[in-house]
Length: 215
Image 1 (tube, rainbow, N blue to C red):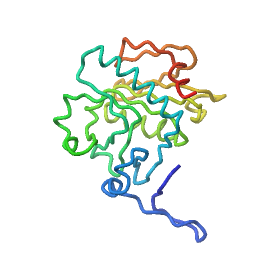
Image 2 (spheres, rainbow, N blue to C red):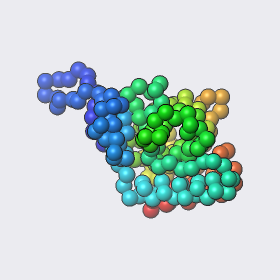
Image 3 (cartoon, helix red, strand yellow):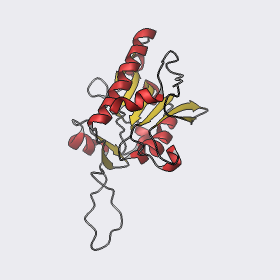
């Protein structure tokens, strides 16, 4: 569900459209509510249903075990804002993000707000797909790659994505995006197919375990 749309030409009978929000305006209106993110001045409702949150929580729990086991100075940030200056009127709010604590000294906003400005601070992200699936499969695949985030999961537990992304007939799909030479190589997993994570090589999970967490 889109809460605001950018200004453009409208017909006489079209409903009035709101002007794009700047990042500061977005923070003033929605900064305290973690269900919204900003993309090119439009505010999007992340639609965190119960099933959506169960999948995100399952991923978080499994990733936390891996972090504890490695002893790396990482932690899981749920729904913090990612807002690099190069992204203009955009502030993503990943469902799950693994943050490198050692990088936070370079984050100018972190001491005051849960806002990251550097892609290098993030080692892993996961998005749980809702009706705004286009953002997860297109815009974020492109932007997260540009930011240099090594691994990105798209957990489409309800099979909502377009057929060009998850095939036909549509079915629950976990897409594992791995950064190679600045672009994501994408592997689609379903059922009992095993997840191979370059960030967490000791992780032992199947696609079904992740995707069924919301059912």
